[in-house]
Image (cartoon, rainbow, N blue to C red; front, top):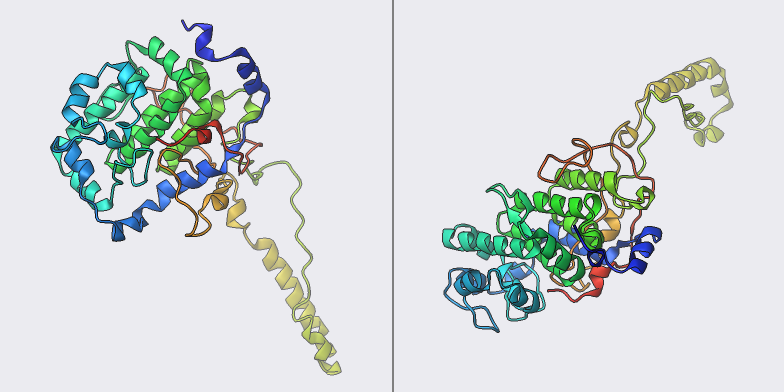
Length: 383
């Protein structure tokens, strides 16, 4: 099994056990932007793209500044873990995004280039090979064409490395986002589920759990899939009271034994106008009483507000805070994405490995918080 090295320094482990994590506003805003604003990316209108990402994947140009073609990367770099670990310029070319990363030679994607990329079988084939190469580097293998993943044969050695080299968490975020850009959104949940399983259940990647919950989960654009992932994480997170990514407390159901909330007193209609009425109107007092009692009855029969419907999940905590506040705000760099905290959907049973269906459990989270201080993911420069 794992050596103690794989679980980080003892002091760090004890700190993690006692310190309650805080949401990163930066991450929330950046991933909200990734999921919701990309279709209106203003650079698509004013930025002339030379399709360099597509031409690279068609093996027509090398990536800069290294001058290496995609075929050489796929054939000669595969399995060369030292090169893949220490070279920091290839990742932006293998997994392009609509935002700038550290390698300023790499061009940002536009919607036009994305559509052309998806129609080019040669590019898609190489993109999947690049994905498999990086998964193997992390100790993971692609199981089938639907995106299911599992531990690779070299998982122990590679998980040990991944647990310690945290700059690779930025790479995973970029890879997940790029999958969504180039037509493989469905590949994200299986990979994130495996990482959550290893971090929270198997405890083979304990150092990755903050990045997984803060970033990886929120690259998933499908709300229901994000909820499944968070519900799984909430079920296995320790200590459970420190889980801040789950749903807020649910409203009491109608059938609960709690006392009903008393209705506010009904004021008489046209109260202000009554001061200006003529004295003779007081003769209609019985009719007015009849109107008032009818209003009371109508009020009693009025259904509860839709927002308080039993079993309905409330809005995601921090969603408003995560929205970009003005167009003058600086765009977030490429590998620092996350989104507003959110809730999860239930699914199956105990600690089954991630290859199985997502689990459920409707346990509410009383400690949901808005995005707060930046997490460790924010402290590393974007890839």
